[in-house]
Image (cartoon, rainbow, N blue to C red; front, side, top):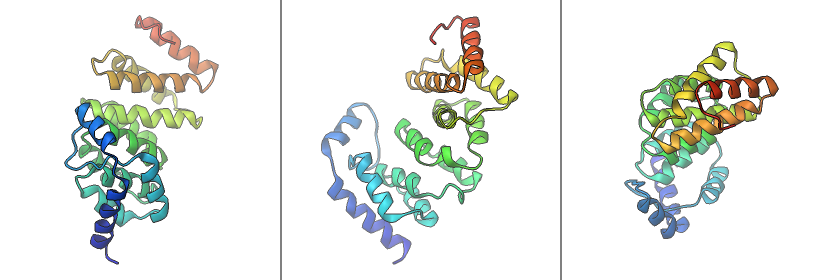
Length: 204
């Protein structure tokens, strides 16, 4: 079966997963996809497990302007095969917080160059890449991956700015990352608390 046929069959399968209340809830929150079946994440995960990892199919699914196709693409893309240039394109084409979060959770945290990408996104002038970057770092910190000294300083500096952003989702993502950074050990916890206090942010 060729890729186009696979994509067509996958899109047809979303009809069985359709959940109008989920789709309506997203529209009510201002999340607007060209097409949104409202499929739940566990159903999409089942579909991803059924398909297995598939680079070319992931590329084809991402090109579809359909919520479920994009999420499924992040679930089936092999993290050790995807090039940084492709990840950059996907980040540029990410238009919702949900897709940014799903990509970070399903794929970006497992990239061999995950930390490099995360720090690159933290330095972005746009909110969505920053949100994605903080989610990736949160996951790396949860897996007890410690940044080097330069990474520590960069993370704390960027997080202090993000914690004062008017964007609630960005503030929440940065706060989660700071909490998980503190979970790396007492030294990290003290560094975070000290930096927050200096900025007048007593939130830990």
